[in-house]
Image (cartoon, rainbow, N blue to C red):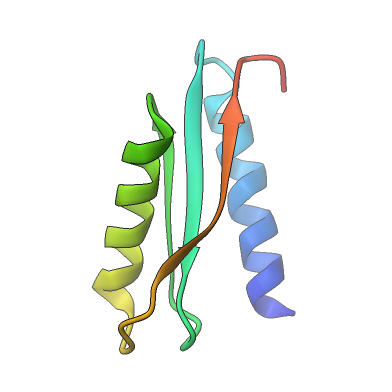
Length: 77
């Protein structure tokens, strides 16, 4: 439940922060121990995924970070 609330909060903040961009990507990655990493305002989905994974790997004690979701923002949200 806490993990889902954290995810929802991150995505809401990311959407608000990137609303002024012409086009951007935001992603969230997580691991089995509850660690999370996220990215925002990246020009490509791939770059946003890589950053979210790197952030997750920096704080996890496990070795299983994976991207949970990526969201495009085209300035209309």
